[in-house]
Length: 233
Length: 334
Image (cartoon, rainbow over all chains, first blue to last red):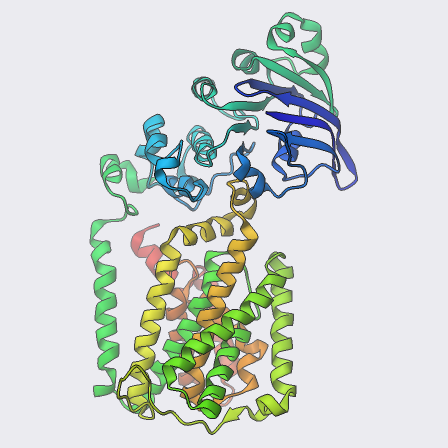
């Protein structure tokens, strides 16, 4: 579904991604691990077109998407839930979702607003409340729901657990498992435990390069890998 | 938080914004009342006040059109007078050379202003913040220079004068030369235009604009073309500014380069900030305060600019969200 081939992304002159390649196949849940600053977020942003790579190719369903604007890429079926969640604080929960809905007839939508409210009753209850008044966990659920509203086939989640209480991390995990039944997912994380529980395959990034790839089973059973490349958690 | 904490079930049932239910009726009722008073104004107020209120209505529409890109979309334009002036010149020239009924001149002015906004907007909306402001200012000055220099077309600094107000068109028998009649025409046109603008802000397009003003990047990865939405807002704002200008030229019996000057572009900015950009009626309220202050102070002193400046500075300092905005915020306890 998604092939990233040797992409190089720069922030001004700093060489953030130095030849990242990875693949996500339809139906998979893949995690992208690495320490702070390893290039995880930049990889997702490069796929989304927010920080276009200077070199390399990104293909989505066979079509080259690198260098395209973010809104174009979003319409192809990739949705990003950014690290800082980035909900619209001044819009209500319902408006946050409506903004993301593509202009197509309700009958042709996989995620009409009623289904989102059915799936996440908590959001239904908060629908008229301003996004800025939600708690961190509620905002994360809203951010994921908003990504679903764009009708993605591939969902990119950037550190979905950052700064959330363990109870809420569990809920987000359940949500990811449920989503995985219908949507392909690529997510990033700094800690292993969540990633190992919910992903089937993983890549480890270090200083803008892929240093390890394999099934999560192998990463789990190889403490050396964990020690070398990840913050122990 | 406080709005829904007490009654979560009510918020589920209600589709609209969760406000105390009394307010939902209070706003339309007071608007109807206000419109009724305004419509009846010529029957009891002297001409002087009719002129003042006519100007308030026109400038209010001008400021409200500006607020579509400022308050709703988050773009500060310093060249909005270009569209106001374009509308004024279009109407003045059509009335002078073609002797069209007013309604057709108004529609033509909206078209020319929108076209100008399409050109300027196409070149400007790709930039953001201060660069956008500077570019719109530069284009505004260019349009001013053209009106000022192209004497054979625009009559230079004298402007276009000597046109007659004949009929309104649409088979209505209106004596437009009568200030009371012209005032009522302005009231009706501005009310309709304001209603259309309001519906635009409440539409899904308006929702996109509000989201863009919060953060364009977030909107982009929701699959929305930010630049195209900005341009559309810019053109719609230009169109309504053109309508305001088109009403202003017959009111002043002249279309002059002053109406295109950058100081004219500053007026809707001041009015909007004065009234409050967060509420739809804020710019109208700000226009009323601005025009009334100006009228009142000029009746006392020649140095009205100084005192107007002091008054505006104080109001902006003590009413951060605009006068109407701050008052409504307090009443709704937001």
